[in-house]
Amino acid sequence: MPISTNHFGASTDRLPPVQIPKFSNLRPDANPILAAHMLQEMYKLVTDWQQELQEIECQSIEINTRGPILAAWLESRTFKRTATGSAIPTPYLNVAVEATGLSTIDPEAGYRLCGLDEYGALWTRPCSMAEILSVSQAIARYQQLKDLNARQQQVEAHIRQILEDLVHLRMKLED
Image (cartoon, rainbow, N blue to C red):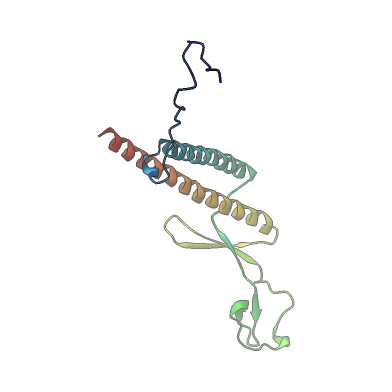
C-alpha cells in the first residue's frame, strides 16, 4: 500500500484524525452555541415587537382619520307605561301591564348617550335615531384605540423588561 503524502511531502497516513469540538448536552450553561442561539431568539423577539409597535402606530393613525372618536356608551331608553301611567324602564318591568295601558308610540323611547367627564361625573344626553350609526361608529373607534393602546403598553413593557435584564446581564458579565 503506497504511503500518501500531502503537498508538503509529509505522510498523511499517520496523522491523527481531526477532532471537531463537540459540546456536551450535559452542560448547556457552558455551550456558546446555545448562548448565541438564545441571543438570536431575543433579537428576533425585539425586532418583532418593534414591527408590532410600528403597525400599532399605523393602525392608530388610520382609526383617527376615519372620523370622530367618542369615549362614551349608548343606553336604551325604552320605557313602557304601566296602567297607572308611570314609566318603567323595560329591563326592570316586573309587573303585568294591561295592553290598554301601553301607547303604540312612546315619546320617551330611544337612546341616550352617556359618558364620564374629566372629574368622573356621569353625563347623559338624548341620542336620536338619526345619530345612532355615527355615534356607534365613534364609540367603536374609541374602543379600537383603547385596545391598541393596551397592546402597545404590553409590548413596551416587554421591551423595557428585556432591556432592564440585558443591562443587568451586561453589568454582571463586566465584573
